[in-house]
Length: 404
Image (spheres, rainbow, N blue to C red):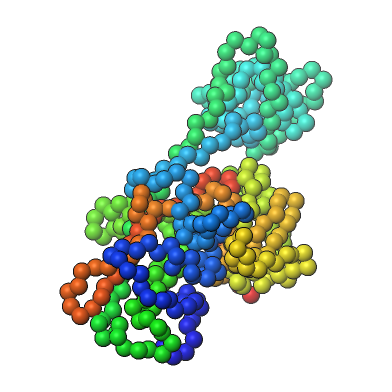
């Protein structure tokens, strides 16, 4: 094969003879791909303390629980809310505040509430109206508060006399789900092509199989980032079942904090964006640790981060890409270059809440199909899903950035 393979297409090396047998696990071949070609899968498969099994193949098997249904389900838990907001403005002297029918379920008579600098005692709770009757505490100063002002619960001071609570139950975990998706490809090599010597290729069959596997895994990597969740088709005109990726759960999600999704409106990336996003995730109760960036944005980051960054090269003990570090008041983050991202996107992730995995034992394998002529045909197949747990609290997305 003349010329140099195009690294963007993922060909890093030619492979030896094809494995014998009718069905072959592709984990070794998958891990032979440069980790920089599969940054998300490789990142998930390279924990801080690397076990014997690591890399992209392990990253593709990181679900919190084994997937056993075509609709894979997980639970997102959260703590009982002790900080909430007014859903209507409060005027000093008003006998009630409005906090909404959801939050009001967790407020009890005799709770102490603080709004701005004013302290109150809860005298009654109307769960149907989403309102709370309040009385100003002796010695406290009343003041008006705007719609959206923070309300803090400071405990209940009537424990000895308390008989029963109006609300206050621990929130039920929210159930989230994603579909599984069948993923397949095949390669057919004629008997003549197998035998013909080609420049730089030791085994034409193995080389063609490697092309198919690597091309499909590059596609799988992009699916994990940008897939839109689609259910079973209702007719032949509808798309088939497809798992949702980071796009579905983060970019299209309803976040806990506004700045977890930042529309840069074609502005150039600045360090201020890197301050706003982690702060929002922190206020939402999360703690991001990983930032996926396209090459063009990484160059912009280097302009202001380079004097403080630490670069890490290839290592057997961690993700094998070129990873730089960024630190601010809300944590330390590894910045991972992802050539598959849109130039205008940056994604903040909490790595432990991301999982990818197969339905049951339907992990990626290649299978030798029966012959029907002078050819050999291999078929690659798998059925996978993805978890993005705590998507409204632990992750974020900056989009529509300038690309120069």
